[in-house]
Structures are given as C-alpha cells and as structure tokens.
Amino acid sequence: MTRISLTKSPLTELNVDALIVGIASKGNAVVLAPGAADVDKAMKKRLAAALSDVGATGKANEVTRISSLGATKAPMVVAVGLGPQPRDGRFATETVRRAVGTAVRSLAGCARVATGLAAVNGGDDADTLRAVAEGVTLGGYSFTQYRSRASSKATKKAVGTASVVVPDPRDKVARAVVERATILGDAVSLCRDLVNIPASDLHPADLADAAVAACGGDVGCAVEVTDEKDLAEGGHGGIVGVGQGAKHPPRLVRIEWNGAGDGKAVHLVGKGITFDTGGLSLKPSAAMEWMKADMGGAASVIATMRAIAQLKLPVNVVGWVATAENMPSGNAIRPSDVLTMRGGKTVEVLNTDAEGRLVMADAIVRAGEESAEVIVDIATLTGAALVALGSKTYGIMSNDDDLREEIVDAAGAAGEQGWPMPLPEELRKSLDSDTADLQNIGDRYGGMLVAGLFLQEFVPNGTPWAHLDVAGPAWNQGEVHDYTPKGGTGVPVRTLVEWLERRAS
Image 1 (cartoon, rainbow, N blue to C red):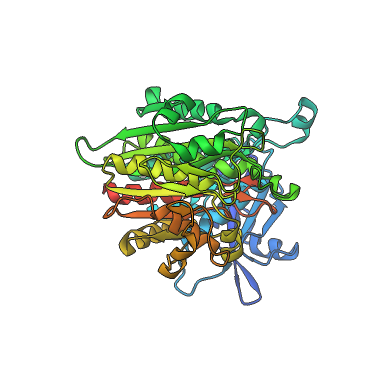
Image 2 (image 1 turned 120 degrees about the horizontal axis):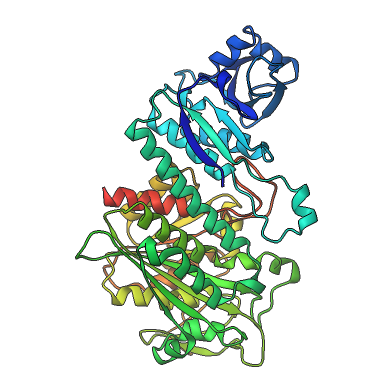
C-alpha cells in the first residue's frame, strides 16, 4: 500500500517521479483545479493548453500524462479529471477520492509521487485532505503474492510514497487525518488480501488464524476460536452442517474490542464460506470461479475489528467470523435434511447452496446470547442482490429504520454505495416448512429480501439488527476503476468503520 507524507514545499521543488494535478471541464475548455498553480507558473502558464493539445478533456478519472520538459524537478506531470467544474467551486469528496485513487493506481511502477490536490477545496479543508489521503491508500494497492519471479518483474509495483502538499505538515488535524487514512487503508488492504487468497490456502482454520494474527497481540483485541468439536457440542447445527461435507472443518471466531469499559457491545457477524461449491446443490462451473470470495463478509469483520482497535475507538464491539467450506461429499448435508440450530430452532435444508444464512444464523444467535446492543451482519449472501442492485451497490435491510439510515449515511460519507432495502412481511410465509420450523429458501422473487427475512428469525426480539448483502461490490469481476482493483475490493470496511466512529462520538 502506498504510504503518505505531508509537505509544504511547492510541487515544482519536489524530487519525485511524477506530479499529480487536477483538471476540470468548463464548457469545451479544460481548466486547472486549485493546487496546480506553481506547476502552471513553472510551465509559463501553458499547462492547461498543453494538456488540451494532447487530448485532455477534464472528464472524471481521465488520466493524461505530459513531460515537464525540465520545468519541474519531476520529469512528468499527470493530470486527472474531476469532471465538470462545480458552480460553487467545491468538488465532492468522493470525486476527489476517486480521482486521486485513479491517478495513483495509474502510476504503478513509480517510487515517489506528489500532489497538490488537497488544496482543491481550500488548503485547510480536512474533508478534502481525507479524500486525497484515502484515494492514495486505496489506489496504491496490488496483490502479487502468487506472481512468479519472472512475472513479478513484469508487474509494476504500487507507488511507494505519495507526498501531499498542505499548508502546515505539523498541523495536528492534518496528521490525524493521514494517520486514520493509513489505518483504514491497511484494513481495506487486509480485507482485499484475504478475499484474493485462493481457497486452497485459506481453509476455515487458516481464516481463524488470520483473525488471531490481525486482531490479537499488540493490536489489543481478545480473540477466541471454537473448533468443530466444541461447535457440535454447543449445538451450532448450521455451521457444523454446512462444514460437514468438507475435509477441512469449520470454525467460529469471536473477536472483542473493549474500548468503552462496562456496557453492551455492538456485534458484527461475518459470513466466512472459504469456498462455496454449492454443496450437493452444485453450482455451474462458471459460477464457482470466484467463490473463494464467499468469505468477504468475514474478511470485512476481521479488517474492521483491526482498524477500530488501532484507532482506539471508545466503543465496545464484538466481531464474529462463522467460517466453513461448502463441499459435496458422502458426508455433506442433503436437500431435505433438517438441522437444529444454536438456540433450538430447526431448519429444513431444501437447497445446500443457500448455506451462508445457515452459518450466519448460529453466529447471530451467539451475539444475541450476549445481549448485543446492536447486531449487524455482513455477507456475500445472494446472487439476487446482484440482480437487484448490480455489482457496485450493496443492500441494507433492517428491523430498525433509524439503524438502516445510520448505515446508509455512513456508507455515503465513506464513499461506498449502500442502498436501503425492505423486509416485506408477505414474503416471510414462503419460508414456512412442512417438516421443520422453517426452510432455508423461499420465494425466488425477491431472493435477497427472503434471505434477510430468514436471518431475522434468529435475531432476539427487541434487538436492533441490520443485514448487509455485499454479494455484488465485495468482489470486482470487471475491469479496474478509480481506486477499485480487480478481485477483492474491501467493501464494506470503510462503511463499518465510519458507522462505528459515529457511534463512538
């Protein structure tokens, strides 16, 4: 991940590989965004014209490179588009975040870059500095763990360091903004890394070990791991049932950050299916290709717990990682099998590919047993979420309107796309079973909402609860864009940290 340093030196005097400036469109013309004045002066007020001459338009996230021709110590000037110039002169923070992320990502292979974009909305605007810093850390990511030596030489490394020009590098607010962005960027990178690791190297026990390594020790969280024997003895029928067809047994991980002393805790529950074949209800092969990412919810919980501990948030939070492999074998659960869940409810399994809700249900019950103040679960739960919301937006369902809006607002502030969705009571009847208390699938129309209704059955009465179905944006199957790489994206770590910060304050 790209690291950040603060400086008050003019861009023209910085000994770096490239300078990043912002441009916008105004009618048919290209205009320089604030923060580029010293570079423009060094280039005899010809910077905008030179960029226009090589085709720059100012379109959002468009990247244009030109030689500085010796006018600056850096050999290259990189202009990134911010879109149309706003009437009030203020660019949206997400516009800045994406632009900086795009530029930093495009400069992979450079050791050092610098930007004056923190001045785009005024030199001392903390929100804009936050957007720039987060753009740097999010865009400066690469996953090269499985590259051979020959391939690694051909693969450009992420930018090493980005210098950000600010009025006072020693300012406490500015330094705190950069520190937070670094912690958040590390957490998002951790989440991305875990999602990108092949399932052959990340079985349930490995994911549990990753939680211990990321959150335990000096980080300050207490981490407990429950193995398959204790899970069975404790009546965790969902986790045990899903994992019983696999060679590698399931785990349940509890991560606790006690940042506010005595009192109830927020509980985060993450789906950790390290590989999902669909079980005996086997997926088509193409649908299985990215199923190493079916633990994205659990990865986001681990990363969030690490971040809030490093930020030392004054809030109590417990994270749960319910992890198993969903494999077909002679030991696998069958359609029509009945599982007895933690707490005693029985579930008829009609489709073994609706397994995530089974492991999540056990963990939600465990959270309820601890008198959780709030429960939020995060899961790559349904293909129906992709059908409903596409690949970049996740659904937020809740039994509490205020809680749902809190998370929607936090997502917007963090730069992630969360959308409020309902839990229609009329769909609940489709989960009724002729054999057990309920069945694990219902009406195929509104499948994302039906899955939310299933999980709601395991939430204690009166406990505020929200369900985040991140099946779309947790994994990017398409091309890279702005600060988003292919593969694991780290969604919704930024939303969760933002929401918890707001609760803490």
